[in-house]
Image 1 (cartoon, protein in one colour):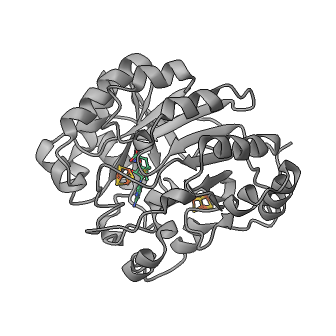
Image 2: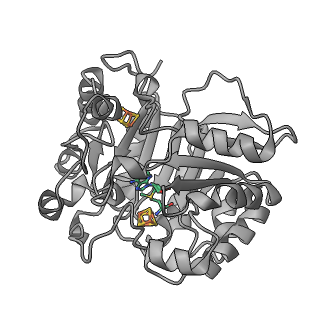
Length: 339
Ligand code: SAM
Ligand code: SF4
Ligand code: SF4
């Protein structure tokens, strides 16, 4: 039985950020000119990650996702994948990547034991990609997607939909995914740390996305399922399934079983959480595995976080965290805590 939090939500889903560095600068995640990086000596070694993951598995975690920053920038990543892939406790082992470096590593990751892959893709237009991500990398991303078609059939594509930025690509992106037998999930623009240019009128809501998709393709039917996954899935009349994550207009905190471990070993109970729990200190300080598990258990039992719902109840919304605070503490950034 997994450990339950104060709202009876299980400790089940762990997102592991393996680096805070990134080779893109998406405008909704890293819009600033420069960033403060985590000190290299603080970054957890593979042995340390392995030991922490083992404790989480004993406490009930069975879903692990590698993320970042850009996880493929972490040196020898397939070695970490192989270590974790051997653990029978991990029932679902996935990674989220921007795919810039995927073409050369997809087969290795699959061979090393990664089960599933999610690729972030917000546009199919080269000029727009450069504007959105500040690097001319769309062709490498598309090559990475080609590699995923072979190595991770049925992979997912995550698209952050922003009004006035890429909302005119809702249908082309859905068709692009369908042609590759990938399941696309449209994500509402969130006001998380790092999204310093966010505004409510840029949020393209699930309600409006569904209306636009139905206007183009005809009736859209919800897929009935009882998982705690945030994506609500829908089916077109030709059988194509897609998802919409309404994390801003209809958040799913009630069933949220996710927590996040930063590359330097801080554990966050919510994307919107102000402070993380330091696990690196005790780990390097020589505490026993049992003491680490006691710490994790006692923290999770008192978890009451419902960050996105709390934000929803605020009338006047502006970006969550001011740039000055982000500059002081990189842990407040989405690219540090792992999306
Ligand atoms: N670099 C990898 C990538 O982009 O796939 C993994 C890390 S990235 C932080 C993980 C996910 O967070 C991406 O799919 C990205 O689109 C999402 N994300 C970042 N900022 C966001 C925001 N303000 N609103 C919604 N999603 C966001
Ligand atoms: Fe974009 Fe992911 Fe990098 Fe953020 S971490 S800038 S979402 S590629
Ligand atoms: Fe979970 Fe926090 Fe996101 Fe709500 S805002 S779904 S509690 S991570």
